Length: 170
Image (cartoon, rainbow, N blue to C red; front, side, top):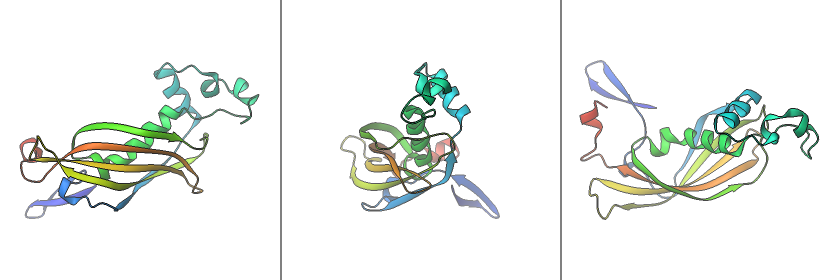
């Protein structure tokens, strides 16, 4: 999170980048990372009604080729996506979509994961003059460098001029 001065000795935290701040080719390394736990996995799986025993039955998962519970890929996707918000979509009006979601390696309890995003494209909105579309490729990486996930995402991002931030007290 960055801050901007709003008065004498007064600062306000802000999240995200305006459309003008993105440059094609820039790479954002999202921090902090997140160490995933069995509790995260079981709670997320049950909350989302994904009762697959590889996510919530250690005895069953112990007989699998992995020998232990696998992290629910919906959880890892949600955590990686969340990590990107301060750098990529904190000033978004809307996510426009995800594509090419690839799950490349298993993730287990105790793994610490990180994310990074590369700006692939940016263009002005044709119908919204105060906004633009930014497309990024995001990688999910374990602490050992193993890439376990990749996806491409587009978001509609505010420009500085005409942003809703002032009206919302941001």
